[in-house]
Length: 104
Image 1: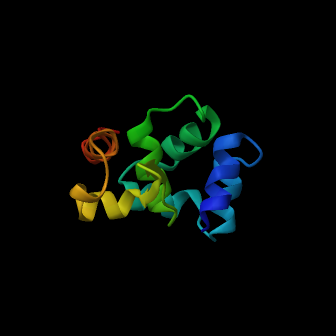
Image 2 (image 1 turned 90 degrees about the vertical axis):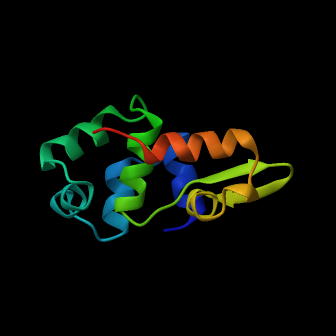
């Protein structure tokens, strides 16, 4: 999964379902990984971009994708920020923290 593909989803030129299929995942596999029903995955895919940021992060993680954040002219992946919060700015750390506390 490339950052460019995730960017296409964010720009609206690719759907979450297309991104999931590109990574060879079924809704059932993603649901199991996230600990939710397959119907919830369908809802997430249909409702994008009107889903909460933490849900998006969990979904992207379940399909093997990652978000990139910019801070001070540098780019950090969500996983890098979780692993080493001091790498990124306070805004990126807050976003990563909030995504880690999501309730589906």
